[in-house]
Length: 287
Image 1: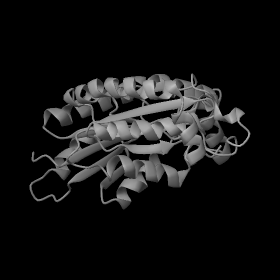
Image 2 (image 1 turned 180 degrees about the horizontal axis):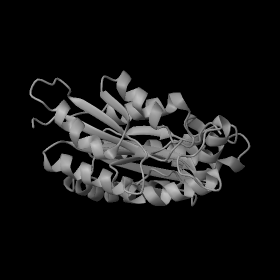
Image 3 (image 1 turned 180 degrees about the vertical axis):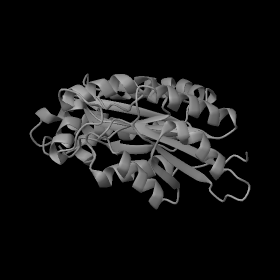
């Protein structure tokens, strides 16, 4: 078979946005098949890689199956790679409470028969853990609406610089809203003085110059950034050497509006200085 440029396997929790992902990639010019039984992936690969085929990017949304779902999906992914194809796995996830609300809002029945939606989600999460552990990128859709999810996927898969071997993302967040599900490295900046307790800074965010100046003026901030520069100088090339395709660095403070926003902006500059072009996200800055 002649390898296509790319196979993307889309999987994840029911209710986490697989249909939105399928629409996004189809709009982006990918050949997309939704609800694909894992056991048929090999047969589809045979069809789309025939010499006369002009399909360069193929996205397969793995449909939910029976007890052999994970084994079948793992086997088919391995077979694609053995055949020489470039294969990536996108896993869509969201916190359990968000998934419960989505199912209750649509009145859909969870695909895993259970006593309750929550129990079905629990069973599905246990079932999919082996696949999630293999994923090249995990996207937490819990705080994303449809448009934001589309934008996140475009950032990850459509705006990738072909000259940069690892797609990097820097995200700020608030611990009070939970640590993002889809991060690799987490740095806690709650050791710095909190601008929230300064009346004139409280209504502002880390995107405003007075907050930025306050946070960067702290002696511990500069030492933290210097040591982080050294650490990322070690880690980024090492991850790239090991073939990691995606890396997400998260910086958290209490509410995700002040300190973490300032430091995430600075961390993005650090990452850029090491030869990468990061995407920058501020998850909780508007809360």
